[in-house]
Image 1 (cartoon, protein in one colour):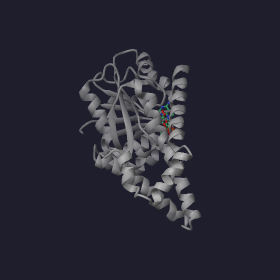
Image 2 (cartoon, protein in one colour; image 1 turned 90 degrees about the horizontal axis):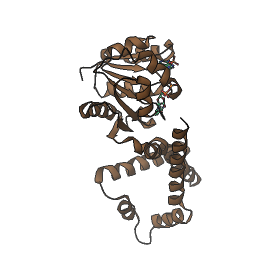
Image 3 (cartoon, protein in one colour; image 1 turned 90 degrees about the vertical axis):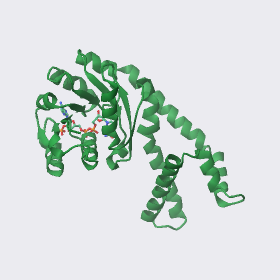
Image 4 (cartoon, protein in one colour; image 1 turned 135 degrees about the horizontal axis):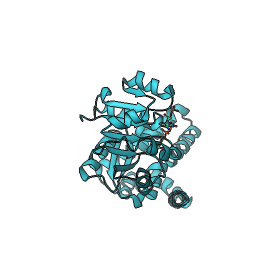
Length: 270
Ligand SMILES: NC(=O)c1ccc[n+]([C@@H]2O[C@H](COP(=O)([O-])OP(=O)(O)OC[C@H]3O[C@@H](n4cnc5c(N)ncnc54)[C@H](OP(=O)(O)O)[C@@H]3O)[C@@H](O)[C@H]2O)c1
């Protein structure tokens, strides 16, 4: 990609995206600019990746073909008002701020901007993220694809409509936390069975990674994959019976519902 990619904000999310796009050779370090109010994060990004850094948001906004807003949600309005008149007419603007809607940002820009909202998740840090791309009113389908391809460098990415934001938040944003609880519980049980703890985490996490890959790569229904592990009268079906009796499916449904409801309430408050 022969474009200048600018970041306003240089924290966890900006760092994860910069690492991903450079590792995937989406662009060269000299095409990447980042701005933040202090050099705290900027200097380590510069040292680690050789990108350009500055404390001047406007300078980055003015020269970016793709401008990524990666500040905390409560700062988005201020940052937009600071840079909106400097953004080029043909630039694509991407916000990763959780809970800030496209309509809200359109109002703050107060001019047609090729805007997309993206919800990445924390596994983007190891390039196994899942990012949802929500196109705004003025962005073209080609520009939306460009944004999708950029985030594909951090794992997987798909284009969705913004009304699915609450479901996305639950199924890819929050769900890694549920999976960590599951991994921790399995490892605890393996420790009870005599396995050293570090080894238990390796076995449990690799089993989850492998099972996830089986779902993705074989295309076989998860229920069928489960059936394939359960030999008649065997050990696994004993465990499945316990999961059903203890209500694992119901607990997962309730957890996802709670996430979606909270996300709806937080969206209404804004
Ligand atoms: N972390 C995640 O897993 C995750 C997942 C999905 C979405 N997000 C979204 O990503 C955004 C950033 O989150 P984060 O976790 O990366 O936050 P973070 O680590 O706290 O980083 C925030 C960055 O913003 C900079 N900043 C503060 N005020 C600024 C301003 N006025 N102009 C430009 N930069 C400014 C900070 O500067 P200093 O370096 O000077 O402190 C810092 O570099 C949030 O909106 C969040 O909702 C994060």
